[in-house]
Image 1 (cartoon, rainbow, N blue to C red):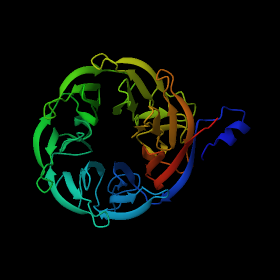
Image 2 (cartoon, rainbow, N blue to C red):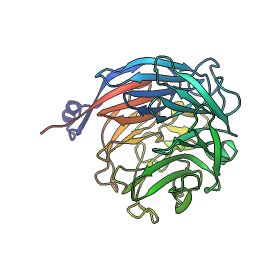
Image 3 (tube, rainbow, N blue to C red):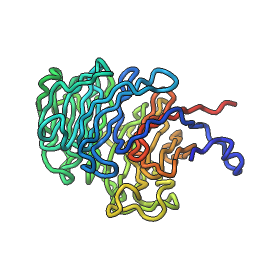
Length: 374
């Protein structure tokens, strides 16, 4: 369902400042990541519905023109594979990471020419021991490649130079976190060049002023976080959000689960992160989500993003997508949500007044967010 101001007012609740309304939906199964460049959104699909390898001829990158009020599907790169994480390198060039993929041999990453979005084509590939997540270093033709944590898939973590997209090559490795990074994010400014590694036992803050040699400057160890999935700094650089993909066990009913939450940290001094607060899964498939019953029961936090004013868009798998007010990062507050009954939201990203969702059940969905007036 979509919670609107009228619905909350009728229930005697506070009218939320944000009203999501559905602009468009493009149905398919197996939705994973989203990346943006200019007028285009790139949404990936894996070779399965809820699990890898269920449909060997399924998967790839859908390209949407999002410049108009209603997005249009303009292209598709058929690359059946699992995970299929996508990043934008520069206008006209994206990269696709995978464990296995029929567009290239082995495990690794392909570079894709999307200068003609109607006819995307693979340019080159690089093999690595494993690839679950990839992250582009802002402003440089460099991509960090991780198997998703060493305990998760094994193999070292790689830094790939894509300056020649026809011949991407591994130019360095990193092993700062003993159990590896599930995912990496960057915050690059004139004053500092930082990265954040969400590892399986701890989160690390890195100085990446030398992009080929990250240096750890801080450690965040939180025993309440079962599986650190992603860590990203707010637009002003003062707050770090760390989310917990607690697939082993978490509770989806009361909104008080000790696992599956996201956590906020003060990183005004990035070398000394300080815990501020947390927000637990507010809803989801009734009962307990767990690894045995897989994603159709999960309500854990997953691939999120910030709005320009520092608020949060958070997907919860079966719990849909929340809009979170972080004006007080010690006390996050949900202002609205979008949670269809069959939602399994994998990635929710904010861009230009819209929320873009890639859902494992529902495909690609676009919501318009209108601030309350008066």
